[in-house]
Image 1: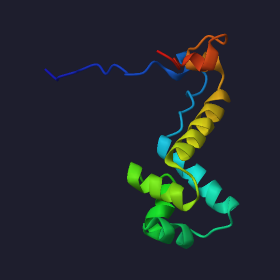
Image 2: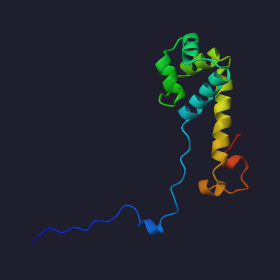
Image 3: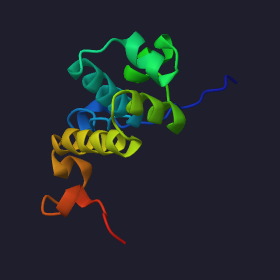
Image 4: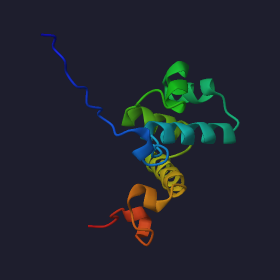
Length: 125
């Protein structure tokens, strides 16, 4: 007697799923890299100039700016200082970018009531 098994799909058929995939939240490394690159370009400085001043390699700084590397806090602080920013300034700008990007998504798509302040984030304990 042959062995027959049934295959059960892990996902419901496409006709029953929600329209379109939920947008991904940006990665922190992408946000920080974007801030570093924007600031460097605003100052009309080269990767080499900033990397030399921060005492990190040009290829590594490039990868950090492109969001390819998760840089340590020491590397981020060095890059920020080379651009005349404090680490807090860099992180505050990245946070602002995160808020801006996530605000573009509809609050209901995140499962947060539209009336919830700050997209439902708890800002104080």
